[in-house]
Length: 478
Image 1 (cartoon, helix red, strand yellow):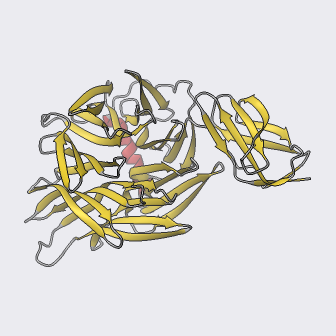
Image 2: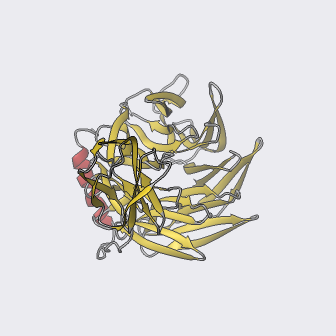
Image 3: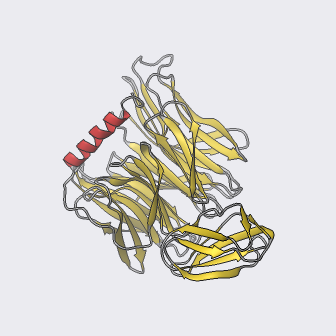
């Protein structure tokens, strides 16, 4: 059904979305340093996960609703390369991507199929060009000693982090629903030398059909590699925070118990250099109609909760990151306006801007990361045009031709806005010579200088806000 009827289902989803959402006039995106590019003409489902490698190049993992496969996209030199990482049906609906200290990507993701025998949480890691896939958790849909009608899910709302030793840590939700057993659990998994160790951090039995504990978990690691997890507890409509130091877990409540009409969804957790936790979350106070973006931070033993954006239904599908100074940055979806928005805290004030309001509904399934200079990068879904989109506020140099001849004309191109300076190196980037300054428009035509070398590189650099991007090695011939 996902392959043959994907377009019909998508049209119906758009129609329902627009029918239930208020319809004010669309906002025009303000003039900023943001730019965007289309990654894939596909239909991601539940999650997109974005990460930058050691060179600042973007990579993302997502489930494609059209064919049911897990996809992996990477951008090098201005071009996106997309591969099917797992061709199993319904793989990767819940996915989390991270890079390890060795520079290799790691992905945790779910596998669910209503006609198969198992629901699984899988883990993929790459060394060189080779991907290795293994199973972290597996539950049987129909097993001996249980009722015939059993529904199980595992690996939902997966969150992955890699520590300094390249050891993976995963938080995820597991759910069993049968006539005799309804159990909802938050699970934490780590990998030793050869096997995975699973711990049940929080659990609730005899729950309703929607489950109750551990949904939408978000995992981060402290500087010494200890796990921290933010998650939603439906039982009391609380946002909770769990931390483990040594062998014991400590669980605390971030927000006071809410009413049955209050939900604290989409928590996104980050830990600063001092070990203090920061959580962005969406608080829905009226079913399907009203919700606000909020931010919680802990100082000492106390949590401070503050509003970030409100008015209508705003703050779903959010993603939080901290800059080097520990200041929060949040990308999120404004359901009321159908936009991707971005909020950052400067001093004591929140600055909110609309990044993409070019479609009726865009900015869902957001994933935010910051580069080494604090520039934001966001992956998200354009529901109206059926595109996976990448947006950035940095400058990114496109790959030059492999061979340049001295004295010929070459067009250098880059993505990004603002004034940039262009440099060239003949020794692989050890030293740089200026070519042009104060450039705009994303391209510059130059005469190849008399610098014969097999180790040439280009660099574009922007002073404010600071960003730079270098090319791979190319050749200049006489």
